[in-house]
Amino acid sequence: MGGLANKLALKTDEFKSLFLGQYPEKQLKAGNSVIYYQTLTDFDFISLKNQYSKFGIEALVRDYALIEEPEILEKLEEDEKLETEQVKTLKFIQRALQLSAHVLNKDQTQLVGQLWGRLQSFPQPEIQQILADAAQSKSEIPRFRPITASLTTPGGSLLRTLTGHNGSVSAVAIAPDGKTAVSASHDNTLKQWDLQTGKEISTLTGHNGYVNAVAIAPDGKTAVSASSDNTLKQWDLQTGKEISTFIGDSPINCCAVSPNGLTIIAGESSGRVHFLRLEGGKKNETHY
Image 1 (tube, rainbow, N blue to C red):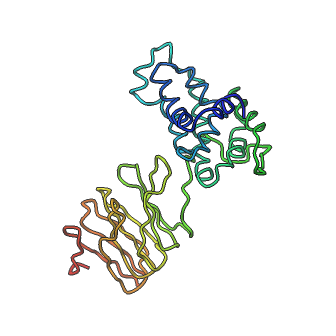
Image 2 (cartoon, rainbow, N blue to C red):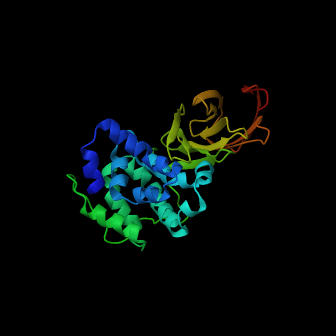
Image 3 (cartoon, rainbow, N blue to C red):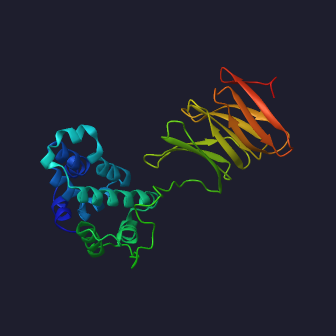
């Protein structure tokens, strides 16, 4: 660790919390974009905020997104805004951290390896300095440092990886607003995800077999799932609770919700296709 880490080591926990949590945003709002840039290209700050239990990797990623907020951009004078190359550098670091989030959420000590594995091929001096400082940082835990950019690098089509299921993922669906998604798995569960943070919102449990398919209603408030346990279940995504269950004669392999959200269609291994009409959030069992 370097100068920033040594200075913060002498401060109280309250000061450290305020500094790590608010310093980048305060600098931008005060028009100090240069200090903001220096802070977010300082390995000490990156490492300390990643390690701090109150914040972690997602809070760190959000610091890099501050420069895009209209409220902050309005307060920066034209001559105080970051140069195009500086903005690119910040975006590369942010996206590298996003790609690493699923690893760092489980093990914060993997930061050095993740940065080296994703950023070595980027020639920007600030990025190379981050890597040099990372290589010099001390750790009580043995770690690998890749000698080549062996991990997915920022700038490609992959934005982040969501982890949490204990079995094969068989299907996914994205809510109409594009902010959340639901995944179906052979671990007999469904999971709802926040796509902006990569965090799990809730786990939907109730199936006793593989969950083969999932569909989200047009209003984004409910979902249906098809399972090898011969059931089709409707879920309230706001509470994570099961609303209703339809029992078929064989494993149900697929499902869909009509554009008006009132009709569900599901396909069974028996070769049957079931139509279910929903009224007031309840099944009308006379309309299979």
